[in-house]
Image (cartoon, rainbow, N blue to C red; front, side):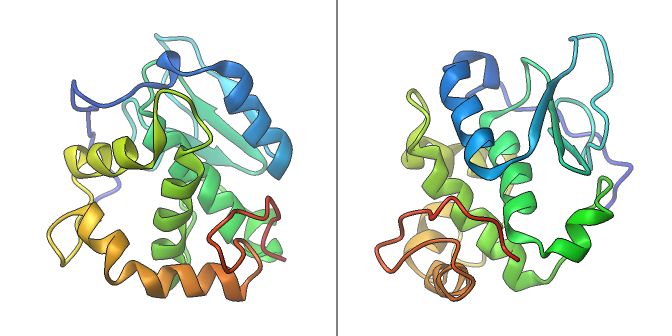
Length: 172
């Protein structure tokens, strides 16, 4: 991945400004990180992809009104899925294994259902529009196919239960 790449949000993805702020805040309260809303004319701190994409530094998720909802959830899920040691030194690049990255993607789809006006189906479509790449050809096909491995990764670490319900706990 090229960290210098600037990736603008496709016009047809759900933006954070379109969602209920109270529901966004409830997710953050459940997991513990802070949300820092950045003014429209300010670069988002800690953004791996830059432009409108959410950023992550320490225990803070940085967003703007034009940040895609899936990007916010993805960075929140990185925070949730990493271990305490990495969380303590977190600055922009969440790192982690391929399995963890898949867990992050799977959890973001589950958490999308907690945001009215977004939901899992729309999250999957927005992931495709943004350019997530899965060997099955689409985020939906991955979620229903190889996503089972990500689901097991999350279950094993206590981040979701056997019914794929988020436990609202951080990985230790």
